[in-house]
Length: 165
Image (cartoon, rainbow, N blue to C red; front, side, top):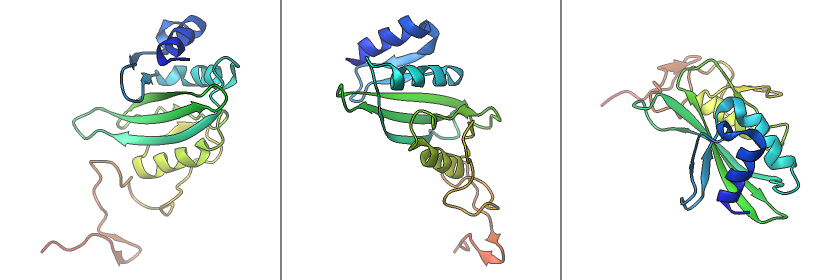
């Protein structure tokens, strides 16, 4: 299926609001999905035999910078059987306590990727089976891949921030 056919299929099955925006001419065509619609969209993409996106090759968090009010989660999906691909994007407000729904029920690989996005960018995922830090200690302050991150001076008596020359 082409990206355009995927959008038409999703909108016909789930309603026009399930795809907020799309760039079908991008090198990797992408769809912007409203966070509340994500579980229904992913269920349709993964479980419908006409689409069968069985492979989540990448899930990553993106901080476009302090000038943007949102963070993004980007999902790269592929169907090994049908040999088609699509990229989903979901946005969340920079400091929103409202989580993005976890997709780990559809693709197990998402468990680790979501933990990494939480740890390094502070993006919460609702319904995740074990959302905790994966690279940093549990008591680390902040999320170091955020563009507005301020490095803490020390951690348990160890100097973290380099002295300025």
